[in-house]
Image (cartoon, rainbow, N blue to C red; front, side):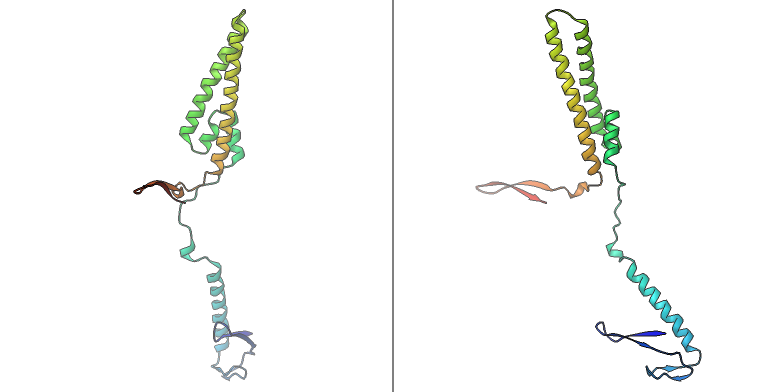
Amino acid sequence: MKIIFLSSSSAISTQLVIPAKAGIQENTGFRVKPGMTSGIRLMSSCMIISLFLLLRTPALAQQDTTFKKPHRSALLAVSFSAVIPGGGQLYTQNYLKAAGFAGALGYVGYNWYKYDRDYWNASGPELDYLYEKKRKYMLWTIGVWLGSLADAYVSAHLYKFNQNAEPRVTFVIDRNKLALAGRF
């Protein structure tokens, strides 16, 4: 059985102690009563276990008690946004952006479809005009769709970002100068 003596924080020593009967132990000088050695073993093992558990658990002051948002997958957000207009924004709980992207994609997509249909049904001098309109709305549809994918990707990565920690910028007006002051 090992007994650890803690005289100060810098000096720790161990000695091998043979459990004795009643009397004074040779190595330590402790007075031991009959039956005391089993009680000392139990008490020392309880102290070691409690010390171990105390050191393993974090202090209460260090625990974060704020609400933690669950993680959002960027790949899943981009996939939703690729299939459903504004789907990635709905997944990352940006409802106004979802409505904006769905409306924008609906508008430019419908105009692309309308000018494409008119282009294939028309003949004569208006073909060039309809082709340019169809091409313009096709490029706008692709641009808005790619913008929706990029926004879904970024929104998924910034989903857990603390919005209260954003920098604040204010104007400072002195006698002869105008300056921007910020807290970052």
